Structures are given as structure tokens and as C-alpha cells.
Length: 225
Image (cartoon, rainbow, N blue to C red; front, side):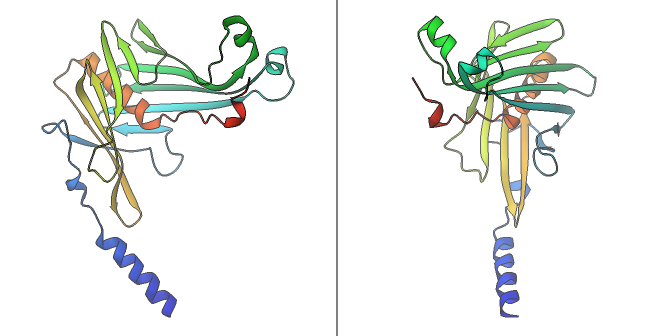
């Protein structure tokens, strides 16, 4: 009985710390609607992302190059992740990102280039008949413009705040894991809907990319040679 009372008191204490969802406000895009992102939490998180008129699907695959399979495996020790991500809007327009990232050492690259890259990233974006490549996970070319992804370390929000910028202007704001009280959390998105349709679709793609991205875990054991 005493244990039950203590448990109930703890639950009430947590409930008393509830943050009303309406209290989660945009820090940069003040006059834009807020959308709840679904799919990043719960059952099979990060596979099926929805917010506003956008629906994103994400597939991730890890390939660990350990053991003697081919000569390349004998001369390297890599953890390679391949990710494909596609977003479509309510009018069925779509854009996609495919990227791979790895950390480890590669003797062949060392012999050829004289240096070892402990973190390697290569990405490609498709939108209609246009293709862009990028090798920095936080800076992405869009024609003659540049998108950027950044984490706001100074935010007062209970969750994590990320921004998507276009030529240094914020076009989307993402609040992840906002505390709602008890064991509940939510993810919220704001987008600049005054931008062109292509920019909005690209922004939605990068919002989904940012919400599901995870850097590779580079272990000290891989920092060899």
C-alpha cells in the first residue's frame, strides 16, 4: 500500500509538470501554422513520417564490413549506412534523398590519397528531372541557392530545436521531443508557406531528413594507422 501511494504521488508530480502543447511556439516563424509530426515516435519510429500535407517514407540499412569476404574487406573496417528518403505532397509531387555515410579506416584510400577519412558522407537529391549532390550533411545545394540545417543550442523549448534555412533565411522550424507531461512527447513543424512550391517541397524533404538523421557511431577502435 505504501509503495502504491508513493508511485501515485510520483505520477501526480509528473502530471503537475505538464507543458500545454499550445505553449510550444515557433521561435523564428511566428506567423506560420504549426503542424504535428507523426511517425517519429511510437511503433517502428522514423519509418513513416507525416505532417501537414506531406508524407515521408524512410528506409535505412547498415552494412558492417567485418570478416574476410573480399580483398576490400581485408583492407578496411567500415560501418556503412545507406538511407533512402522520399516525401510527397497532397498533389503527389515528390522529392527524394539518397545518402550513405560511413566511418572507419580504409587502407586502399590511405595508399591512394595519403589520408584517412574517419567520416565519409555522400548524398543525392532528386526532384522532377533535377539532381543535386552534396557531401556535407548540413549544407545542401539547391540550384544556385543553399539550404542549411542547424540545431538551436540556445532555445528555451523543452525539446530539441532545429532550423532549415535557405540562403541563411529560416524556412522551417522543427521542435523534437517536446515534453507534454507524464511520459508524453510530441514533435512540431513550422514552414514558411510563402515560398514557391518547389522550395516548400524541398523544405519538407529536409525537415523529414533532419527529423530522422542519425550520425554514424565512430568508435575509437576505428581510429587506427
